[in-house]
Length: 208
Ligand code: NI
Image (tube, rainbow, N blue to C red):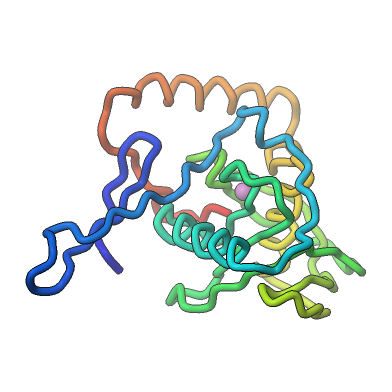
């Protein structure tokens, strides 16, 4: 993993190229993650119809942005791209990236409450009830359709990311009072950190 420097909104990954190259061979700008209550997070995403190189690049950007944040899931909506694409990696080693295109929930079973967080609502965690097991139809980056059952953290994460594609955030499941408190807290933190170089990571919690 190359070193990651985080500035206010732009996360930059730099690495040193081989002999004879410039010191910083390439500077890759990761995508900016929109934060609540940004109205663009309320956009409903459109289905992906073309499984081309641009889609591959979008998935790469999403994964890199998610890993750098760090988070365990990211929806295209969160980087202001309104296409039905989500990426997830719930593995401890961060080596099992999953990209679901045009995901649809075919069946839900059971109910489970899990403490959730979100890269678009930094530093906020609360319990959300969701289906414990889901059957999902989606497409892979090549356009092939697959149907699979998911449970545990993966099921929670898929439902959370799919909400993003509908313009919905996990704080929408909380009371109006709580959501308003969160909005004010984030606003205050944004003011405090503007002008400062570093932004703290999500800490021990996992953000989706
Ligand atoms: Ni999220």
